[in-house]
Each structure stands twice: as C-alpha cells, then as structure tokens.
Amino acid sequence: MKVTINPTTCIASGTCGRLAPRVSANRDEDGGFVSVLNENPPETEWAAAREAEELCPSATIRLQDED
Image 1 (cartoon, helix red, strand yellow):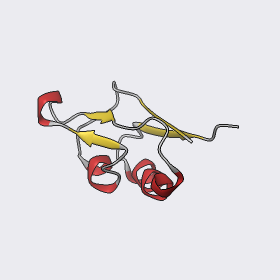
Image 2 (tube, one colour):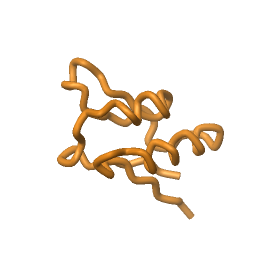
Image 3 (cartoon, one colour):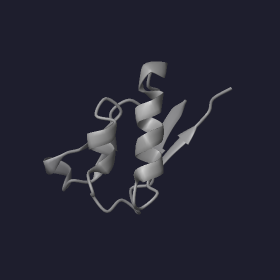
C-alpha cells in the first residue's frame, strides 16, 4: 500500500494525524497541514491509514494498492 496526499486540498483538520500517527502527521511547523511519515506503511498500519482516508474531510489522503 502506498499513501499519498494532495497538499492543495488539506485543511489541517488533524484527523489523519490522530487516526494514523505512524503514517501521517499534522505538525505545527507545517501550519498543521498533513505530511506523510511513512509512504509505504507496514500492514499493521493499513487499517488506521484506511480510516484516515475515509474520514479526511477534504479527501486529501489517498491509498493505493501496489501490485
């Protein structure tokens, strides 16, 4: 699985950083906007990453299955 973001749509809600803190973060030094911490998280983080994608209010986070 690969995690990508669209930085132009992020509204800095902090949802992704709270739900998947090992995958993404909303850092104060970035104005609260999302940054990806692990572009290819281990399978143990997939459920959290999927929840972050589903609940992101601006559809900024995208998950792609890698074949």
